[in-house]
Length: 430
View 1 (cartoon, rainbow, N blue to C red):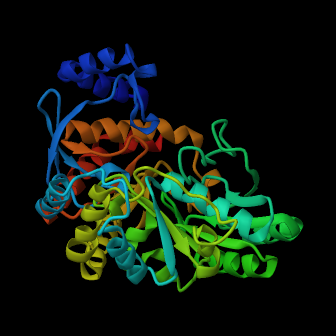
View 2 (view 1 turned 30 degrees about the vertical axis):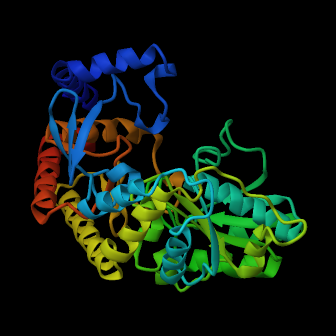
């Protein structure tokens, strides 16, 4: 049987057992385009409607239970309704949530972040990683008095800063220079060509939404040198990768960016973003200085994110916890890849630590152009197979570990993947 036929069978079963999710989707289409307000969550024939979560578990509208291996695309590091996070949110609620002023929590979270990430001397909060990257770019342009911004094909820096196949139509209209990830020679040539007007080089140490493509240490080190030589601001987008080590991926690499952008889990699961770095650059936002850059945002310092973030960084995702979680992720990825080799399947999991992504190719992946466009059907097959076995992953094959997951959960996932390989490797190889 072909992959397409196998996939159709899985989809038919999916439709049959999820009538309430389907009904919820049809209702949503009456008031939202495509029944959707967050594009990454949509998939055919209709997306699951999640009703509740607890720990590492999710339940959909039809009552099916799933082990959550997506963790809100890395924001759900602490799982669902972690008792200490909940206690922190309750405490914030007791004190009032819209205080219309500076509060007692924001500087405490800022101090924890600067302690965790030494390159971040000062910072400002935002509501998302998207906002953090927008503000970092604005700061770099103002600081250098230049107009061009270098990014990399396959990169994702937020909903209006996405470069999966070049700039997206919805992107903000900066003058972008688009480089090839992990390609030192071509990147060096581009930087030299545009050096006189290059304000910033913005890069993910590992391209997350692009498929967990790991940045080569020598490539990222070259970016540090090129930015310095050109007088441009090097921005590390660590919205996802900051969870990979106590001090983020930059601490593992020994590279100090000029600015770092953060988001996701650092707000304890609440809406969160931050950008910060060198004091001379961040001084542009000092409201005591004439001509400073304004940076508004009603909920930048909201007490729910501040309180949850303080508890998360100080009491739960300690440096020791970060090291342990990412070691578990490395071990799982090695087990999965060993299974691919053992079965002769043309598959692999890329990534680092607690973040990984399935790909329908066994050759080395250095940049997005190494990923075949035809792999979508392979990822769909994997996605619906895993749903049928009680695991919730991203349709694009993205897998994220959260703290509540147990060794038993990961063993069951590996077993479900072994079943996937036994059933479909012949078709995948064909």
